[in-house]
Length: 67
Image 1: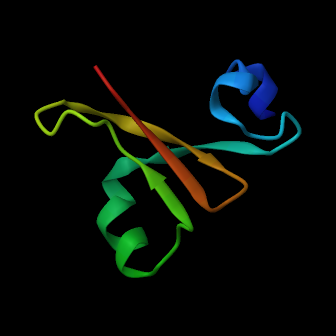
Image 2: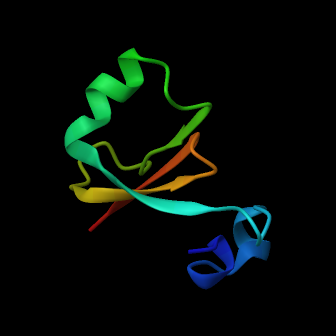
């Protein structure tokens, strides 16, 4: 899967040829402690319910989504 298949890229500033994987957020704490991400984008609303899955771009940039 490619990022261009998911987002309107001009909105996010990512390369449309970047690879995208689905990341299971149940492994989030361990991945953070292992420094698995170069960047993490979380919802700005601290009370938001984060979905169980997120987008992992190029194996290092995590984009979490909220309801």
